[in-house]
Length: 486
Image (cartoon, rainbow, N blue to C red; front, side, top):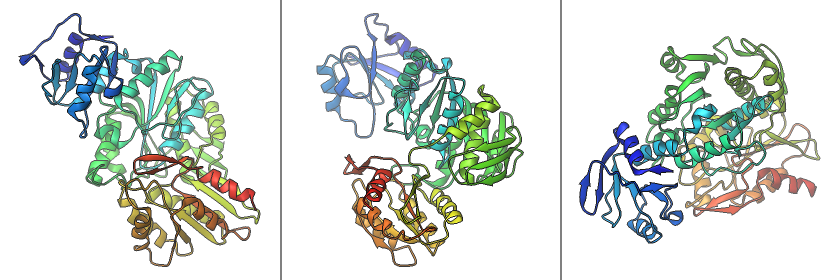
């Protein structure tokens, strides 16, 4: 429950209050004792007399507000006066207002949890899973992840957004507290800061894994600089930080966090991987010792190290860290299947140029025969990835390439594939149907040493087409089905 008086106070303290407009009158305060709210919403379809409604979004239509009023809505918050029959609480920034009001409405749940956040162009989900399994050893962690979310450690569901909208986020946090959770691990995207989903939130530990060009386009970040800047906001809003010393622009980050509690990890720091094997590694520094790991690749070992350093600050013991790293598996991340011929299949979520380069390099290190890559690019976002994929493919001339659909949305998947193909310096196959592409890729696996790499969708059991999630068995399941027929 929150009163109109409390709402206006919160907005004024954040210098985000303009006025209340009620029946044509401009008011600087509005202390109606009967105007209280027991629900928050930005969806007019679930708004009624008890709801404080946020009129937000570029596509918002006055008809939505009118529909909510017919359901009994008594007041709304907006950057625009829609001149309707109920009071309008006008603000300069609706997203900031949502975050701070939700935080207070749900009784500051962030103060009752230890918060760990991961950002980076790639590896957020993997690092979050490592942290979840580490903290599970002696604590009760919740997890907000692109792959899976759990608010009680028992029930898991797929998240719509990497970082939820602020109202949903603070509701989830409150549920974590009610469920007795002690820690919350989050993936925090650059979009979360761009559209202020985590405005006003401070993290106990923030981890910056890496940076490379991504999410740059008309509906995302206008430039790489803007993308990088919004990633760095996590460092400003964390009490302690963990940063990859091998990442691009590390010197800037090192200077930025000089006055904060911090740990650096990676090849230019004391916390690094001393020896790396396929399923084990030796670390030096704060986490010195030998570790078993299920995910191959040095980059996954460094993700484990980053998670371990973060969890060490949050109460995990060295033994917890070893056990948690050894127990971690991530759906759709470097999942390996065996072909009857002795060849290997690798299913991975790699969906930008940098993660694809690392994936291919790891596979080439272990498989020396014929290698086939199946990949596509998403529609209506991350358009720079298409050229990045072609650039990576051109660096690996022995790869056979099958281009296919990957969440084409409102674009023609064949056109997307052709756009990639036009930038590749050798012939490729285009098989738009993703399951047919996987079947074709399996036919290239003849003997031990060969490999099929299926990149992009990981464990996602859908294709996004024309704004809708169309059921799809998932890359791993599709591959298993075809393998069972051999």
